[in-house]
Image 1 (tube, chains in turn brown, blue):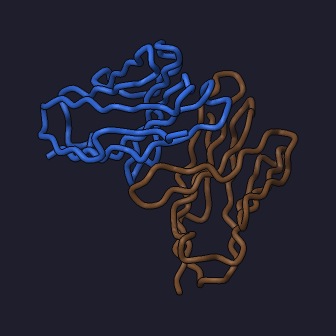
Image 2 (cartoon, chains in turn purple, orange):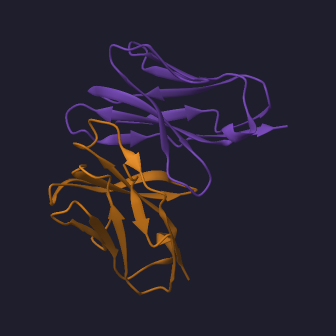
Image 3 (cartoon, one colour):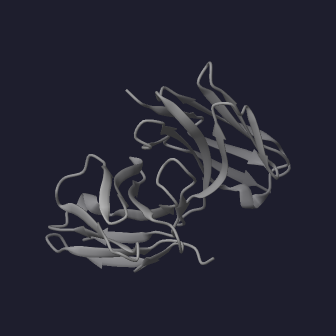
Length: 112
Length: 113
């Protein structure tokens, strides 16, 4: 069964600290993996998209990694800011149907 | 380019009523996907339309339906509303569907009383 599991479910960190969010998937055949940031009450916004051949991609203070062999991805946030408080959703796309499989998300709270 | 727009942003209905939500994709995008988001279930795929045809469908009852017009604008309809239909309904557009990046709208918050 195609699944995307994210951990931790929620996380609280202090402003300025780094953190890493995890995503494990069992989606096959794999097409790409995306990380989205969703502020409360708003639609998700894309942070990164990685295909099978990419193992790192950065977007400002956000760096995503992908290990296609172990089917794991991580999103590292550097020097966190209060505005990073949001849900972070890992999404994997299958290459045969193009369907997206969503993780349940990690809720990050950055405190001053 | 203007982003994805959804109307209305907020809606309150009572059980048994029906509702129609609208989504205007980014200009030039032909694929529109609809999602339901609830605190307990996360984001769940409803259906995808591409060039006025339903291309993919999630596991939702027949009360949930949609359509796409020739200008790529899409509508989603929910009939005989239930309390459990209260959710944030998101639409996302892309150039060719899930194979490329999707851009989400702000969502319509539906409350069923």
